[in-house]
Length: 306
Ligand code: PMP
Image (cartoon, rainbow, N blue to C red):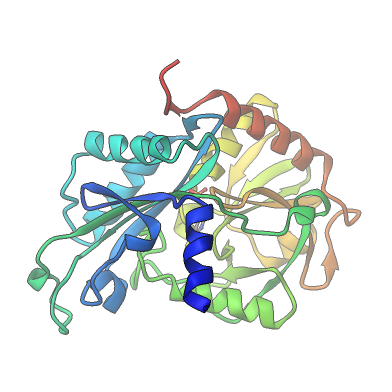
């Protein structure tokens, strides 16, 4: 009886198609080997990309970062960057999305139970286009509260935070710690005690009217949304800086927000039980969000022929 219900449900809502090693397959059939080292060891890397209004936002930058991550872990992606661009665009197109989140993954591929990556036959490449909601909708209007967590961001001497590797345990632990403390998002410090970033987002503050974010060298991923927001700030004549920040700076910020492809731009109104500004999303944050939205609507690699 239960299986009959399942079949009816599957037929009622058409499945999304996943790009998997050269083919588009329905979600329920998109399977990867249990011997894939992406699964066994987190050996691989990924990208999170978005399409807005039928265009893939900053695709070139995402692909560059994807190939840089792969290069850093000595993984040769079996497709050229141009071919990968087609994979991403096609994945959005076959699913008829105008707005979606795109997950591009390359893993070391199937191997044996040892670590040795050179025993893996060939990398697995997959691309998923789907919907995503990182935080509840009302937090985009009212802002969220974040809290500092004990888990520190990885050091560059261990797994460089600029590698978007398939092993996100560092960030996952931080996310759990935040949740256990009753917070939606974690503020992660680096080993030196400076602010690094949140679990899947870069952090910005506004202090004395200047928009400040930690540099990549502080243990933050060099976010593509972060770069876009810095550009937008330049256009709005808001002064910007990439400098080390302490928790003190965040506590005393006039405004604060987070950026990320999945998160987009989300205001922060509290940190470690301190209210930021007047406890509401700040005026510069609101302006930056509006301008960022405009940018996403009118730029990007077109998915559909006009
Ligand atoms: N930091 C981390 C750890 C992330 O995973 C992400 C999301 N990719 C970001 C920051 C934001 O980067 P981007 O704006 O390029 O998505």
